[in-house]
Amino acid sequence: MEDNLKTSVQYIKSVGPSRAESFAEIGIKNVRDLLFYFPTRYLDRTTLVSSLQVLEYVRNGYEGEVTIIGEVINSEVIRYGKKQLFKVKMKDKTGIFECVWFQGIKYFKNNFKDAEVFAISAKPIVTRYGHIQFVHPDFDKLATKESTDFFNTGKIIPFYRLPKELKSKNIGDFSLRKIIHAAVENFADKLEETLPNEIIEKYNLPEIKTAVKNM
Image (cartoon, helix red, strand yellow):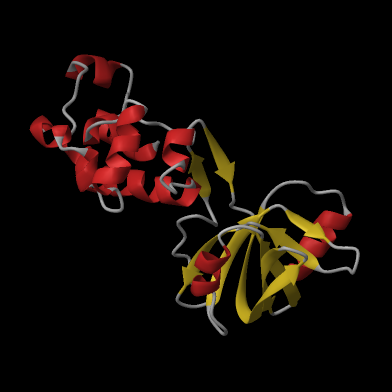
């Protein structure tokens, strides 16, 4: 079973030969290496709120992240000088909020369509015009407003160190989470236990495959 873990990372979904070279530069050459590339910290995105609650949170000095679910009203690319930003206006049952991105505009423009539903996670701010705004938030596209099919939002999210070698191949936080998730889903069960059973039972330790999945 462990032989499968020697498979090159290029065969993991969303990697390929070019990105595999960048992974190799940071010491990740095969699936096993990728499985043991653990998060450096975790982001708590379990606070699911309405837009009205967000307003109250910010006005009361809250500085953490929140998760909010809303429907896209409209979107636009705004140009200012030689620069531009992409703004998405969304709504929930209690009000309206905005998401803005200053980079990757083409990507985000292709992802957000009118009437689609998204979960948004980020630190909220209130603009001088009184608008709730999220700058460069993470997001999940949802089937319905009642959906709980979260990947980047709505739960405890692993945060991985992102070296320049990966950034050079357009691997961001979301892409890296997706790649590692694919490796864990397909290969974690193939890890062979390294500790004796008596040690595992004596100290009530999880199996290695369970521990890796829970990371």
